[in-house]
Image (cartoon, rainbow, N blue to C red; front, side, top):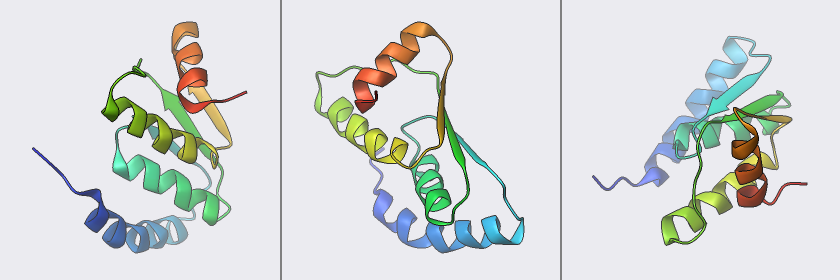
Length: 102
């Protein structure tokens, strides 16, 4: 099923902001790099000054178009994150390469 995330972005950011403020959110913790909602939440948290943490569970490739696009999105999202957690050393090495982290 093809999905277009643009309408989700236009609708979800005001709703997420409302929830973050109303609930006095103190940290945003995201999983799954392919989730549009996770990427939006992490970036919005940064804009609102809320610390964010990303946990990575997956090993993604580098050689197909979907992986290239996903890795670029993840790189942008992780620029706003305060911390990243990986579930293994292999996962950590993969994330460092994919998101071009130090």
